[in-house]
Image (cartoon, rainbow, N blue to C red; front, side):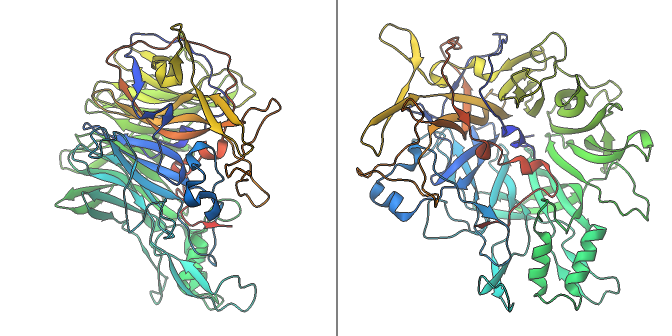
Length: 611
């Protein structure tokens, strides 16, 4: 019940968070990974950090994304502290004729760190990766952590390392080699230093007359792990009809490329973002015993006709310690083959020990739904998509699997009735506390900013997490007269001038909550933007310092970038009630939206290349 696959989808928060009224019975929280009004929230050498799961021992897992594009002259001799501002990011594309460069790195952090630096993100190698700060090595393996159990076993996914073969093309050759890998992504668990692969059941294509084969690799991902070492996720179980046609082309005489290279090209996203090779995908669980994983396919929510050529999908995204698994699956609603939908589901074992599919009933007005997590009491949380006041919205719901005939409940969030604010839950603990995100403004014609929320299922209390923070956790400091004011961050510009801007921290999502109420997720922090030349490099002034972008008043232009955040109930103090009219700058969309892929199929975009 620790991580759900879509945990980071809601990181797409734009604009300035609105002011929301909320009750004050919830605990006051403080952000505990602050260092001088900044967040220790990503790995060195990366721009964006996301915390995705926390266990009972205050250990978390997360992802850093976006290597900074810096020339050697930018960082030699420590001329520039790249953490001071927003540096350019590597531009990544897919290509079979360019070397593969990874851009995603798994990390861990914990409160009782042996380095006496609590909650410091620490790189954790999977499949031979090296830290993003190590510029002497070019990583080709992207790695991801999604969840961690109380025994410290971490689960996620990884890509295969790069392979290459001589490029024999006679025209348009940009490199001497073609580049490919054995699989695009694969589930993995890590116990101590031991990596446990979680492979899918379908990895190899065999043509109709069984004369030729192609190694495809398939795909799988591990999304959550419970305290009995049961892992939930999804895996490829067969290939789609069109995908099979494309592999047959690679096996045929018209293909002039090496087989592995041709297959790799077909597994890339094309110009529309889709992949030619798709897989039938099913929810999957793996039981880990003595560092060995045994997999079990979860049933689909429908039985396709024998001549049906559609590609059906199911994913397991969360589970509890009783082995009940939640997620989503294609289903014919109420058995009607004309009512195909992808809806929230849960799987539980019957008296014979076999997993059975259970639909979370949805009405005709609901276009789709998904379940993210379930606690040990059987309380499931998810979201559905429906038109509200003429606009398509996502709404958080709660469903009790103990009473499956009773409809789900949609919390009223900040109103006395259901509002049109989109919201999604990401985790529920055994006390019934739920964390996720919610929109914060009611303007229907503009992008709506988002904030993390805390919901208590037992009382119905719904809070914006930013309204529960101490003032220090929001970037304020006390002045000499005892009032609160924004901390002024000062920095030396390449022009020789000292610039300053207001510190600010905004929690945009809660992704996981443990039994003690520790919440991890993502916050936006304010940073100034460097000036770049036409080649995308940082411009350096005569004094050797970086030049920052300035507005018409000569002040730094600031934006918000995502960072891992850790919130704990405060031992003293009260929630901050200070309000100001400070210009909060712009949210950097590219950094905030980086994990939206976690919710789509094909799910992962691992094959990428610097332009």
